[in-house]
Image (cartoon, rainbow, N blue to C red; front, top):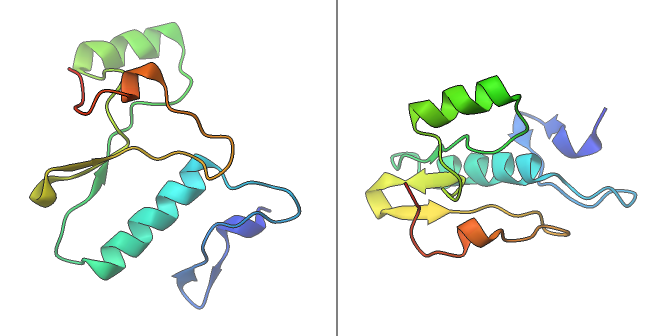
Length: 104
C-alpha cells in the first residue's frame, strides 16, 4: 500500500517523499485538484487525459477522437488557465509542452 495516497479523517494527505519514494505525477495532480476544489468550490477544473501508455489500436482510436500531444493536464475554464503537472522530483517538460498554448 502506498503511504502517499492514504487519507486521514476524510482529508487527502499531501504527497511527500517517504522513504525515498517520490510521489507520482498522478498523486500530485490528484492532491492539487483536491485542494483546488476545496479552495474554489464554484470554479470548475478538469483533467485532459492525454497521457499514458496505450496499445496502437487504442492510441489510434483516441487520436481520431481528438486526443493530441502537447495539451496540458488540467484546464480551468473560468480563468482560461491551463495547468501542466510535473513531478516535484524527476519531472521534465516535453518539447510539446513548451508552447504557451495547447496544440490541436
